[in-house]
Image (cartoon, rainbow over all chains, first blue to last red):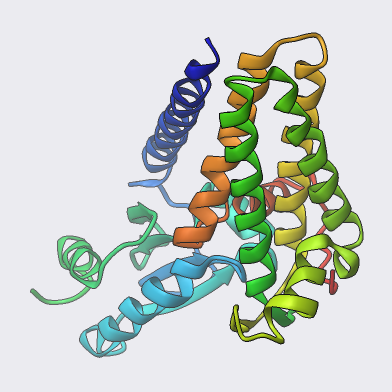
Length: 134
Length: 152
């Protein structure tokens, strides 16, 4: 019976992962298409990060830096540390780090990415939202 | 801000001790149930590390043995240590709960919790994914934990 312990542990972790995914899907449904109101005027990418989020620093921030030239000043990139600005993170129902939110000029969320979003994905979302030319 | 120079190698040493201790304890317990004693021993190590980080066993081992001999290299980052401390607390609470389950003989439930801790420690060790730190950020976000960014 004791040999079942690792299998049960994997099952518990899998269930927790599914619950997290469901929460992320709820977050997307809640945000996308709705005016949530960003902390900046005009089109923006909000990048929610944290001091202990390694992937935020090693992957997401460099991806946003690579994307910056393509934005040509049309879209502002704003990094939000969830520990420094918990109210803003709460408003956007951030459940995991990194999270990136593409906002249009009216403060309406056009795309939400829970977890690392590659430069290509962000660029596509900006084009689809009509915020940068194709 | 509470971001301070913080040597992540201390965490890695702690994770290796934790994973090795739990794996050895689990394998031995397949033949000798009394090996569940590894659960409270490691729970104490984790809870002590969360309460008094400067005196934790992994830190002492790293500073006095591993680092001076060049066996583990320092990996200093400037960050807030509070989430890591919270993650240690979570691991310690899981192992304490596992110990309580083992006392009346609920070994499967106890070692299931033990394996969850092994899996989370492995995620942190191998991929720097700190689930306890994510929980910490969430609890700060919803206001359960205060925003306190002091050196731990």
